[in-house]
Amino acid sequence: MIKVGMIDITLDNWHSNHYPDYLRDAAKRLNMDIDLCYAWGKKDSKDAWRLTNKAWSEEKGCEFCESCVELVEKSDALMVMCADDCRPHEQLAKLALESGKPVYCDKTFAPDVESAERMFAVASKYNTPVFSCSAQRFCPGLTSFREKRETADFALSQGPGDLINYSVHQFEMLQAAMGTGSVSCQAQLMGEVKHIIYRYEDERMCTFTLAPGLPFHFAAGKAAEGIREISVGQYYEPFMDAVITFFKTKKLPVLPEDTLEIMKMQQMARKAVKQPGEWIGL
Image (cartoon, rainbow, N blue to C red; front, side, top):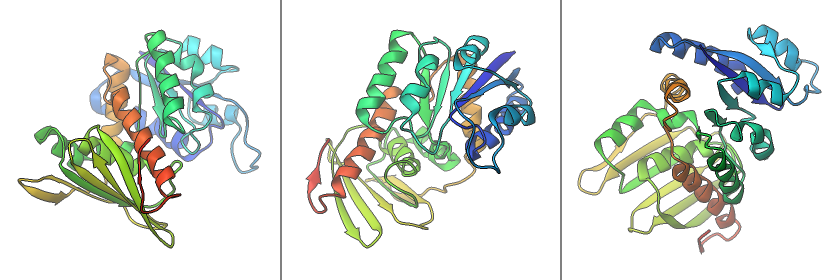
């Protein structure tokens, strides 16, 4: 059996609450002998309605470890969570990245390109296979688009959230369709709406629109065939299938350069909204 260990700050949160079931369902679908066996949380939540890390582990049917060292030693594969705040990821993932064992690091990988580069450098030093992504990257329609075309000439994305963390869902889809090579972006603002245009070194283009309550929408295409809408949904099953397949094969479903591109696009966006109308590079 491949024994998976989950690392988080506080285990009782949306992603960590759902991923054990998603992982076990994926194991059944793919007939793989894999399970979440261990968990460790850095601290218990101060919220009275949240489970303690030990109680959470008992409820999820896995062993609570007293330290991250213990968890990393016992596990065959590792999931570094803390999905709602990527700032602790570099320290939270340190022992996992030094382990040589396959590591999935939940979105957003890092708060900036510099942190992401340091994390990948640690993983490379210890020959640790690691990848990060948003589940939206595995929308079936987007996967089908990528299988038929190497990259898009144009893509547009819209959705809710913020430019610090939640925007990663849009950037994952944009990067999956467009590949790498963005060089600059320009922001246009209207109230709470942030609209950003990205230019690529080969003159391709994509757009990103963010506003509170805005539903996810995505479209992409090639110049010769036009643009097509791509449904944003039904992504958690193929996403978790990819995660546990990676735990078995150690083959990366998302490359470091793809994740670094996403970090770059997100970081440029945060700069651009402070200087609307100007073209901003990293």
